[in-house]
Structure formats: C-alpha cells, structure tokens
Image 1: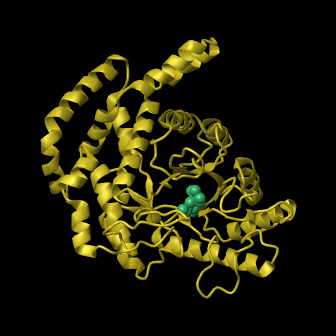
Image 2 (image 1 turned 120 degrees about the vertical axis):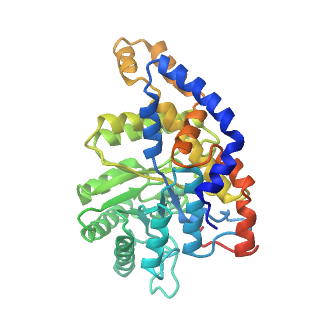
Image 3 (image 1 turned 45 degrees about the vertical axis):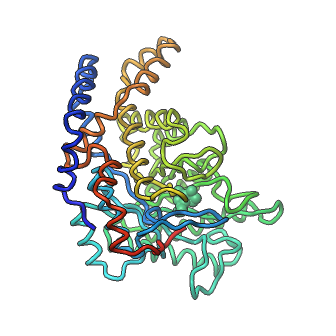
Length: 426
Ligand code: PSV
Ligand code: MN
Ligand code: MN
C-alpha cells in the first residue's frame, strides 16, 4: 500500500480549520514572547528519526507473542510500512536494519523502493545475541568477549559482513549491541571479557569505511542478569576511545538502572564529542521498550533540552543517528510508532522553546527558581499545533493516527498481506 499526498490532503480537510485556529493562536503567543516560529518549524521538519525494521511487527515477551494482522513479512513490506509512517508524519525518513533479519536479496530494487519513498538507510545493527542457522560457533557464552578465539572471530566476521551490507545500501554507521555478560558470580573474568571485547571491536573498527562510524551501545542487564560486559556509558566510552575517532557511545533510554540521570550522561558525552547515536523508548521498570513519552515525558524533555544544547554548542560532537527502539505486544505496531514519533517531536519542540540565554543568566545568578520556571514553562506549552504545522508544510497529516484510521491503512494491509503474517525480529 502506498499513501499518496492526495489521500492525506483530502483527509486533512476535516481538521484544517481547527488546526489553523490553534496554530495561529500558538504562533502569535510564541512570537510575542520572542520566539522565531519559522525557525522552530524548520528544525522540526529537518528532524528525522529512523524506524527499526523489527518494530513493524508486534513484539513479544518471553512469555509469548500475539501477532498483529497484516504484519510485513519481507524487507520490501517493511520499507512499505516505513513509507506509510513517513508519508503521515514526514519525520520517519529513515530505516534501521538488523542483520541477519533483513538481508536484502535485490539491493538495487530495495534502494529504489526506499528512494521513491524518501527513506534513507540509517545505522545497520549486527546480531551476535542469537545463534544463526548453520553457524559453526554458538554465542551462548558470549560473542566478541568469548574466551574462544573461534567464536570471537565468527562474531567479528559477522560485523564486517554487516558493514558490507550496509555500505551497499548507503548506511554510514554500524551499531553494536552485545548481550555478552554473565548470569552468575564467578562465571566470567571481568577483565578478560572486557579486553577481548576491546580487541574484537578494534578488529571491526579496522574494517569501517572512511566515512563510517562505530556506535557502541551499553545495557546494564538482560539477557544476562549478573553482569554485562558493556554495562554503562563509561564502559562504552572506554571501548570507543580504545578504537579511535570514528567510534562513539550510543545511548538507549531503556538501558539504565532506575533513576539514572540520562540528561547528564548525554550532556557530558556531547561535551566530549562522543555521543554517536540515540535509541528512543520509554520504561517504567527496565528495558520495557514502551512507546516514547508514555511514562516519563518530563524526563524525555529534560534529555532533549541537553541534546538541543549540545547540538547548538558542541560542534565537536557529530550528527546523531536517531532511532526508535520500541515495540509493543498489544497495539497496532504502526499506531505505536506514530505515537512515538509524535512524542519525540513534542519533546524536541518544547526543548527548542527553552531560552538558553535566559537560562544561562539565571544559572549564573544562582536563581534556582527561575531556572526551574524556564524549563517548566517550556514543558507546559502545548506545542501540538506546531508539530501539525510542520507536518502539513511537508505534505503530512494534521493528525497522523486519525488519518491512519480514516484511510483504513491496517485494513488495506490485511487485505494485501493476509491475516496471519509474521514479521522477523524479536
Ligand atoms: C537491546 O536491548 C536493544 O536495545 C539493541 O539496540 C538491539 O539491537 C535492539 O534492542 C533489538 O531489539
Ligand atoms: Mn537499543
Ligand atoms: Mn533495548
């Protein structure tokens, strides 16, 4: 299914008058407070987030998976779905592939399809957390950190193969997330596991094309429950530094122990020029991968405030690879992603409303109340008409979920693909 601009434009007609009213009211009020509304709209339009290929089908838990009708079962269908998300939101202009779940069979055709939908191939993800069919070695006791050289070599080779696949598609970075660690005290020698991982990453780094980045993701636990080799940003940063200038830390919102100050982590990494990528999701307990902004929207805003500050003040930090890393068990995956994309744009827009100069002055004067007021005023502004205006400007939907339902997207996908399709992925 392809959503045309005409489909969306027709559906927008129902809400156009009310959108214009709300937008004009908000734009006037922001302008009178000294904001440059056009500049904010341009920034919102430019901000593109990659959709992970594995989130287009219903996720599952280790207790089961309830599939959702009309799921994409080929890479082509997954890109079609990202095309739908992008047509509606104008902010999902990239896809992030997980290899080997998504190895293209016809590169030219896939690239042409993505180009036609204005979708880029963002970071490619390797997978050494599952054993692959016909693989000689098993990752049961780790991959890049394994005590066996044969296992490490197989995992290194897999990452080099992933770089090669990504290169053919126009990706510019490799994301490495390892499940490596231990489930019981004494199982692993921490130092050996870390050193093996560093050496393996150095070998992978040596295979990076000149204009590529290596993004190293950390996570404190799961699937291992006693220790993880790359447990936190410090371990990731040490490994990145041990590789070189093209290696960076990747922050996933769900990969922190409860109450970690994630905004401070991203801020300091950007100061050091070492934040390379970012995975959005939300969580109540652990790596829950819930819809972005569904649990802790203020925390997301505070993180965005630091990201905006970093993007404006830290030229030493490269452009980031932004990706949604959420999936859910019980909702329509496309509706879930539409909600996540909206929440990301909302937090970004609110962060753009923070007057950084005014905040700086209040900080220097140690006016704690004013500092807090500046942030909370921005957070409490209802920016949704701004997001809709940014979408509208580029041919997107005023209200993506409403249009998705009005245009019977899921029903059409079910008609085209059938009811019982299963997407590859977690
Ligand atoms: C691991 O929990 C993770 O966040 C990594 O980014 C993986 O590649 C992804 O999830 C797969 O679901
Ligand atoms: Mn992640
Ligand atoms: Mn995760």
